[in-house]
Length: 275
Image 1 (cartoon, rainbow, N blue to C red):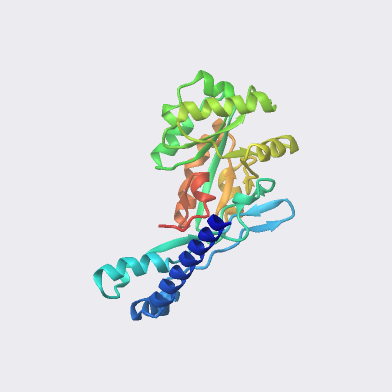
Image 2: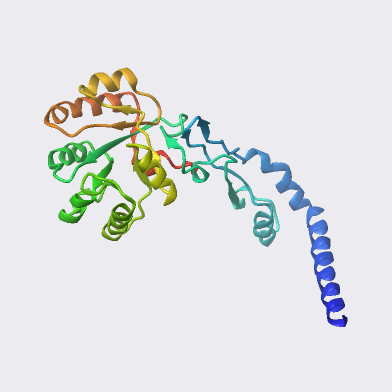
């Protein structure tokens, strides 16, 4: 009983001391000035948009970290905006809490787009890579596990690699094994699945991978289809064939002329604040 009383007294003393310090600090003119100016630095977070079974990423915000800013400025004895310390604020609704939804685009406020390509086990991508490299474009490749096992991926080092399937099929054991091998081979953690059917959606939700549903799937003519449907933060799935090769550069030049940037899926779908 005596030990319990001592512990309670210590806890009360600790709480009271911290409370007293907080009151004194909040009365400091320096802290008051930090509080009075904090609103002009703050950026409100933006919630992800959910509609039925789809989701569009939101954006993190930022706010002044009062305690760290006060401590830093106190060392210099004066208010100095350049010493302000910030902390991120997460959206209330975020893609990070919704693995059961299909991501259909990036945040619409950003004038970016992302090219994605499906690479089957026998696909030849050398010509495609030469076009992308010529235009200095990063893309995202969803690649079959057998292709990953049988090919050197060094020529894809500037691009993002995700798992498409294994031997053109999807089941939990082979898919998760192929994911592990992809992570080992690229030294990066896979993040996305490409929508195919409910099996892939449910599987990827189970292993905390987001499933992507392209905003636009090119059927035949990339230039015309992109020109008619180009929007902020579109995810554009482009087939790999000779006709596409002969028209892809024209499409890329059109997109660039409209002021769009080309990003990998990770960058396009990120909810982080742009630097």
